[in-house]
Amino acid sequence: MRQSAFSIRQRMALDACTECGQCLTVCPAVAASGDADLSAQVRMHNLKKLLRDRNFFWKALNEMLGREPLATPQVLKDYGLSVFRCSLCGDCEEVCPAGLPLKDMWLSLREELSRTGDAPDKIRMIRANLDGSHNVFDEDNDERGDWVDDMRKPPKGGCLKDSAEVVYFTGCVGAYFPLAQKIPMAFVEILDAGGVDFTIMAGDEWCCGFPLQGSGQSEGLPAIIAHNVAAAKARGARKVVFTCPSCYQIWREAYPPEFELVHASEMVAQLVLEDRLPLGELPMTVTYHDPCDLGRGGRVFDEPRAIMARIPGLTLVEMEHNREHCLCCGGGGNLEMIDPDLSAAMAKRKVEEAVATGAEAIITNCQQCVRTMMTYAKRNKVSIDVMDMSQLVAKSIEAGRKALAVAEAARTAQPESAAGTQG
Image (cartoon, rainbow, N blue to C red; front, side, top):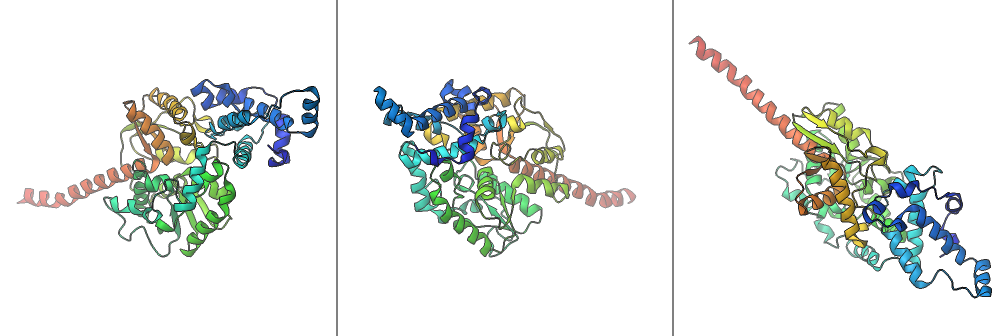
């Protein structure tokens, strides 16, 4: 493991860590597993020891004293696995009193472990799938837009245009995973209802590259970025919108600033503010889950709550952990691939906290969060619904249209009733 794999700021952060333990107390992986080695505190401590063991002076001293080197192949493999048993939720960085750049540290660490071959072998599948089929599921990429065919009422102008002001970047999970396909369906209904000039890119869309970055294989990112930027430019787009927070995050952080980038919740909030959506009554009590990449990563906290406040009849009850300290659902950082049991244990903790509020449904703004929490709830027969904000707003629009239709029918019938009375 090389010192040069880490920036000067990151190396300073290693020395600046006081091992106060605050990151350990908030780590969802530690809480779900009971394994303190997964905490940022222990991970930083072990990294310092591993880097010191590779230092020329320390190597010479160990040899002189007859000590066994710490960084044996097995130690590095075990350490590599512990580093990848993390959802990259970022709450450790959120609570760090020293303000250390911990999430960037974990990404650099994963890059180095991937380079040395000490990362879990499963991550190679991500690179192979993206190189071969341009999506994480290794499906035919030409079928990326097939979810449109399953819509009850697709937009009259269609979702696939040669040019549009807005490109809706669907993401792999929303495009291919059956449980999550309802989210893009609902979102395009909202765009259509709001009169937004939009298009999807279907087979011209490639995976955003976030799974590569999270697995420490970002050398494949430049080709992906170049393709997606060119595809959006070819459609004359001014704006790119995302229902997936991870796609949104990597476009903001790694892509060139060619477009205005917005998350779906931000766009919907604007449409609601401009009264462009016929929102109807939804007599429901819900709780809101802030996705890690959208909340802590993108600082989007207020817009989802502003939308819910405008839906008639809807009551929002907050969970104990919310906004910047919301508990991770266990679906990020490629954790499900590395340790599905840990991912499920984190989802259990999240769903149990939501159930404790008495809410009928968990609302969130992430396909992966919906998939993770809904999968846990269904498998364990937990009586709570899970839906994306787009699905909630689409339901409200449907209720609003029905209410308008009933009112219009009543208004039209009034003259006939009056005429009948006069006769």
